[in-house]
Image (cartoon, rainbow over all chains, first blue to last red):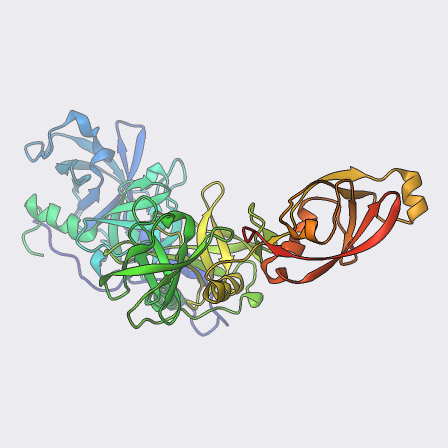
Length: 221
Length: 300
């Protein structure tokens, strides 16, 4: 249904590389987060609760947390029959709004997929979380409280190994739920889903791909 | 500019990897195991309080191999224990800690059993001078860190962005990381290797702070307002041997005034065991000098 995204490095705003003497980490974080904002959406459920989502494929596939689009206890573990059953407002960084239809949801791994009727979206470039080394820079973008597109930085706490979650030493807020956790190049490695002992916990990009395949939302990966 | 971010990310991950070859896991320590740092060839340090009661511990080497290590020395005062590791090991490289600066990037690195390395990232918030643990041990420098602790970090290194060790990480108050600086760890390791323990100075007196009456200060020409009144004398101690009596008031130690129990502690540092200190005391309304050799605690 959805074409795989081009797995190439994010197209970042052109930097005046030679004009800056020394390293300017601050503005570099700024340009990566600018890119991440373009692939991050706000998911509004029932008019008030806000979460985030990531444009996973350009043809209108949005990935978010299961807990952003419904309370985990009130629904069956895996709901494919709900296609067309739930609808959420999806707001893009450029201000466009669309109706997002819940097409898959798995509370066990805290993932959900929404489909929007748009085909020209800027999609995330994806990197496998298991290729990360402890200490690599992590950047999260989300919509905590009223801070739309809020950015935070941290590092990979430890290698993912066989786990389907990635732990990062990064400060997240509840509105980061469903939003992207990305590397220094802006490549998405996970979907932020929990805060444990002050650490950010994200569902890995591999787990997202498996979830989408299982839900038959991806034919080819 | 984005490339600078990629470089930064790489250098932090490299620093973790570099020191990682010197970080071990100590499985008996704490609730879910703690970390240790290979300090010299064949020797590792870890957090003493987490392995109290063990003569031998199970460690996971950087290679992932599980093996036994014997505990060959302990210093509860600085919370450092010394482990003998049989395998060929690569010792961590130490930072020039005197050159560390506030704002510098630091990492806490630990090993989680066989799962590999774990790390958190932060900065040095403040650097201070020497301080003493509640057991009275002198720590050469204080580092206040803006750095998250995590399960099993104790005993692992705190490193700078080059992967050089600033000190050993221990649990501090209010979910913070306390650092025993490398210079102090070196001193503790040297003494543990030499004596198998850290000698603690012992004078053998119970003391109480007293204020000198103004007329007495004037008569004796005392600079200090307070002194330390001897209220008990351990019969087997150097205080007894060298003639300190109940009722003596200690005014100075090696010419520096003592006005609190803590101010006497530097005289009892381990390097002073066996050395002669010169006390100035008030006895019977007169000022007199009394040389005393510092004994060792527990060596009756």
